[in-house]
Image (cartoon, rainbow, N blue to C red; front, side, top):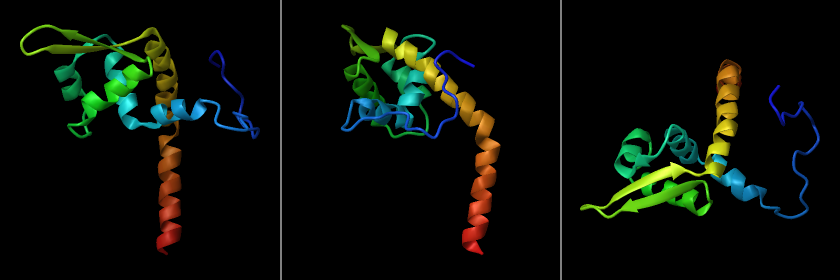
Length: 130
């Protein structure tokens, strides 16, 4: 098991009487664009156009919006080069790089359980359409 791994539990994972800051992180992680952008930046910095091309299946508006949100969160750095036209490069910060391990674990879990989830979908759909 990996460091910091928790056993399966029925206890609440987070106990906050009020919002304790976890929701912001969950919102960012739950955004599919975040996972795509962090994944594409994991190997190293990318120019805006390259990132836009690599992050597929999302709208044209996504690339500038998601990296800027990640920049605001301190997960991505943005560098503007004074060229004509200006070139913009995004890179993961140290905190952003630490997120790649977590995303990798989520991807591994997804791959390990996709057959079970697909089967559950089929069974549920069969019950509801019958």
